[in-house]
Length: 251
Image 1 (cartoon, rainbow, N blue to C red):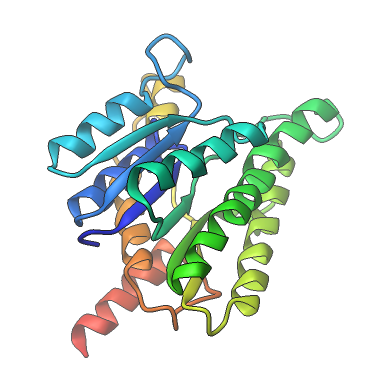
Image 2: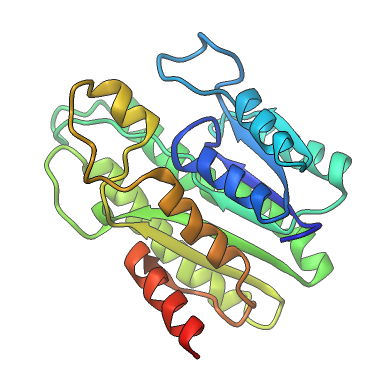
């Protein structure tokens, strides 16, 4: 990743924050995007400024850009500031997501729309705006984030699951369109319980000792980001990535 520029959405905490740090550790400069720019702005811990500071502590450049994916003008500004600062984008990690825990009957349409707008439309919009710059250079990597809820029926998670299943289809379809361009599109389906700052903050006293750490998911994302463009159109779980890494290491 040396000399490359990566953009990570939802990077104020959790898997996004861990991914930004892992990319920096691998040598990339990182654009950190999320809604939470300052302490006290959200109930959960973590800000984009704090993540950017951690990236800089690793000797890499960082740019923190407050970004609400439901507002097109903020996503456009994210693209403009990335290119103005670094002149390029090599990796886009579409990680940002929200959930609303309720049955379908008890989910107001504004909440349904919010989940779909952030998770699915946010992924599509970021890709739509960053993709031309990757295509102009003939190289780039897009990693989308999904969840086991895309394929598992868990009560009170329907909107989230629908958004993640759509992201997987979007990944596969776009990858087919981009064959031969040098731009790859893959999806990491988080199939394990991950002890993010959000989960631990909202569930104090819970035993998270058997849960995966956000850094484990970040390692898988970085691995996908450094693969050649011939590896594209895949929806892989963390276990799949670990198996592929082991097979490649043996060969």
